[in-house]
Image (cartoon, rainbow, N blue to C red):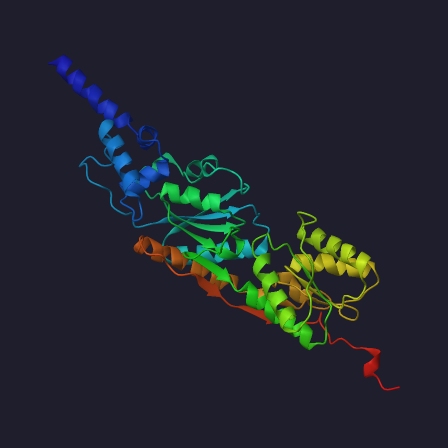
Length: 369
């Protein structure tokens, strides 16, 4: 009798020792993927679900003593995934704050993860599964239910997330691929913002307008298109410095002006791809004893907090980061409720904020003798 009781006790101990991590190891998937299957999250690929359930049967892993599924937890966990950027880049931190306010209002949780990688990295080498793990105690709580992807990203990251079966939405302006994303993305209207800014400078009489920004880097592409379209309609040729000369936007703006002015001094206005580029360009102009806006008009893009307090205040394009954040998380909530649906792209308008760094181009011919 004693021997039989000892055998039963060992079996009970063995069962208690089996963990979520054991299931993930046997199924060769991430712990987050196991949690998603256990909690019956929508959008889990049937092959992934089959592998996890088979592993659970093989090692006798049961989430509850009654051997029933936990069901979807009341509190969901989402990940703000920032790639190839730092939170010191203001638009990203403000977008995350807007998302966090919305998830908190709904009683859900937002966690932050970051990653630096390049476009050539194979999807399987990005180690996304490990990055999105939380901790063992969450096997009875909530796994990461979805990802909000921001920062500079490439198709390999999208492929890695799809392979894991993790729902995601993307800040589309920062995605660099052969085509724009056709679904599940939020864009701010960089094209229209740059077009309106360039039209504004043209209306002020400027014809030699310099654009600074590398169109191979995320959102600069749509800005360059809007700028170019406005000039083409006016019968003018673009003057653009589109090479990345520094990892610092400020330095890139400074160096771009230095290079362009070695070839011509006829530039009367600058359209900068972001406010920080604009500040760098402004410094380079000052070092050449050129005044903004007396000698050169200047337009930025972003409307950073400091833009209203430069002397004179910077004319720029405002990105509605609060709306972008809300649209991103609301799109993810919709995706979770309809995992098979391809949700349409959302475009958030931008607004030209006219301040003190632009003025009409005045020529001597306009003054009577």
